[in-house]
Image: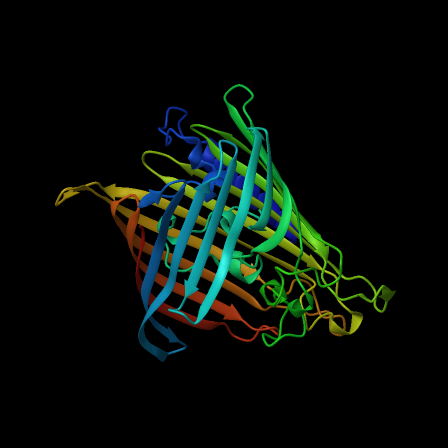
Length: 399
């Protein structure tokens, strides 16, 4: 089955799952159920004048076994993030997020942007922003998710979390009972590290550059955009694109190499009903490579995931109206599509995973997660799959 057939099949599956549900299913009665609102759909603990502060913390345990060899047991504080938002005026808002990963091992400014609202259908945005490739990159806060790990496709192909300096537009329209949203941005873009890196494969996340907030590596900005259609009771379907030139093709105005482009296409669907929630995303990447790298590095990649969250018990625990969910994630990533030019044999470098689990929410802003991961990895030439299994317990909460 080729990539086009897979994307069509998964598209039909995602749409069918959402649109076959009863029309009278109860949705969250707020437009913050839609992806574009994720940046503002966060709690804050207080304010001083025009400025509000909030954040979230995320931690977990890990215990894995790969082909019978245990990797040990350990604790991990993945993230401690701080939000600062300021209503500068009726139409101007500043939003920022400072991220501490693994304690203080990595400190990064994830967002620092200004929104200027002309009207709901036209807003100007500038600063360090999250390019809207798929749903996850712009709506990834751990307290919103029932799984400890981020989906493989959103980290292995889409380089989430991707923050870039740029400028653009976003807005919404409300024809009838529909909500239409759009985002369009120009940003500095990724760099040459996506190939010939320490990973030994094409990996877009390695294209993040030191100094990427200070300028473009080649003077040719990347473009990203997302268009989505949503309807209460049916959920939201989004289509997005990210692309640009990634290599240093010119030096002081002189062309020194051919331009190499990358293209990312994503399709996402999400719906939250009273009795079930569905989230899914499919991504396809095309990367222009030097001829001598083809085969060893992936010129085409694809991946996807679909999450099912079903409330199975709603107990009152202490003073909380709590929810216990049964959850399941199905995911697959192919880092190198196609065949070897010398032998005609299939190129592998693929990961398939199944993640069942439970999540417990004493409140909507706090979640405890228990996941079992079963994962199969086949190397470039397709040797017998390396099998990994393990348990993760995690927690996340807004504050």
